Amino acid sequence: MGQKADFAAERLRMVERLVASRYIQDPRVRDAFLAVPREAFVRPEDADAAYEDVPLPIGRGQTISAPSMIAIMLEEARLAPGDRVLEIGTGSGYHASLVARLVGPQNVVSIERIPRLAEWARSNLARAGLSGVTVVVGDGSLGYPERSPYDCVMVTAGAPEIPDPWRLQLSPRGRIVAPIGPRSGQVLIVATRKADGSLDVREGTPCAFVPLIGARAWSA
Ligand code: SAM
Image 1 (cartoon, rainbow, N blue to C red):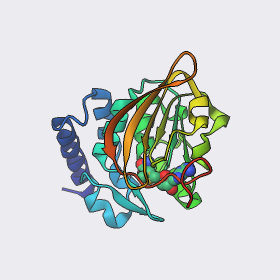
Image 2 (image 1 turned 120 degrees about the vertical axis):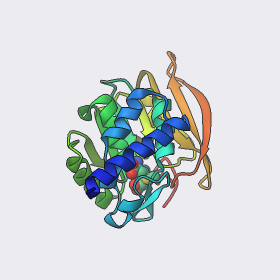
Image 3 (image 1 turned 30 degrees about the vertical axis):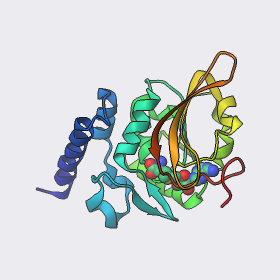
Image 4 (image 1 turned 180 degrees about the vertical axis):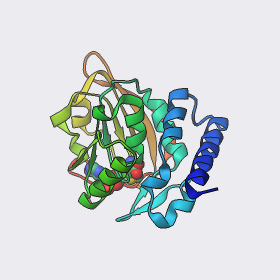
């Protein structure tokens, strides 16, 4: 069996495990995981570990999140085709590619503060056939007003609190899915914008993300 076939079999086994443990419940989320080659979003030396349920280093002290954590976030986000999504913390581009499978690549903008990672993510996304995703370099703690409003803001780095720009850039009934709390460990929150513009915040799974570094987040 060639390496490509090995990866496809490993991907299927990973998805089966995520379904069995109920991290994945929505068939559309399952199909997205089945469609995206995670090996294309890790460093070549980590390809053998691409389908283990662990975060992996991607350089510059950053990580690609564990698949189960990404599954939890995608289930919480309840994305529908056509939803406009801002992802904050592009990293490898893997999470953005799953979101792109769910809403359409042209509806996804992802922002990354480290230019080298943004460049790498763009090439990973292109190799996965998802070059329609827009990757920009900037400080996502300020959101990305240029493409707002968003139906969902998904954050893959830990913030001390929800910065106001994220709320202001949501569409009516838009949602924020983000790890919020101390640098050492956060809680995944799902915040839905209410008719009066304020947020209805629900706390979910405890988690541990690398810090969101920016003007409205942690200092470097
Ligand atoms: N979603 C990524 C993936 O699928 O590979 C993993 C993201 S990694 C856990 C967190 C990322 O957030 C890092 O690449 C980091 O450089 C980025 N980051 C941290 N602070 C940021 C900020 N203010 N704006 C944009 N990106 C930021």
